[in-house]
Image 1: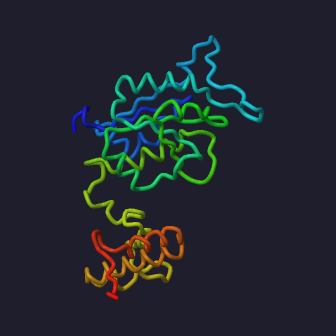
Image 2 (image 1 turned 90 degrees about the vertical axis):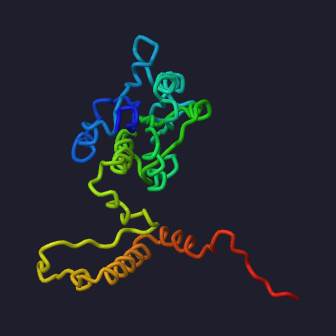
Image 3 (image 1 turned 180 degrees about the vertical axis):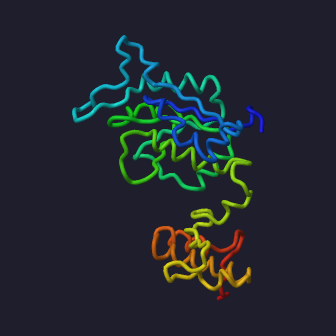
Length: 251
């Protein structure tokens, strides 16, 4: 893969030293050194125009905390989008965003990369979302100190799907969320541990039985552990084939 074809990540943050962090290790770090993806961090504070390099201010209407200023954020975003950002989505990590899904991760991994805006304090001046084409993304229903950890999570999820990063092309096919289900339970040696054995079906050598068992366990675990996913999965399964029409009796 050439440098021009690699997944390009640009991070706009107040803490650029947090990157690459864990993304410099394991398969993500190896992929970075091989040029399968690239990382560029920009300090938002460098785009402030006053002598104190102010990036935030008090909330309009009162309240605790500080809010990142839209004017400073816009200059930071434009500096990237006007240069290498053509075609890359601009993502803002915020608990007010849409939940990140495996489907969205696959879309991002198949693209040219992303520009990721990391929030801090009480968040962003809302006008930045009206003025720039920014997709707001959340990694879960909880609050972090800033968007950097969310950006690391998003990038890790994308990088492992890039061509050549994982050892086998099919190694991610059966993982949780790929089929709408949680992944089935996994086992390995030793076959007996603390009185517990690996299920017989996994030692049978019967690939059809193994496949059926894994599908059954994935469905059972999803139904019990994630009823929200199970409801969505069931809804997809009962959908009629595309183009099918309901037959009615003639009067």
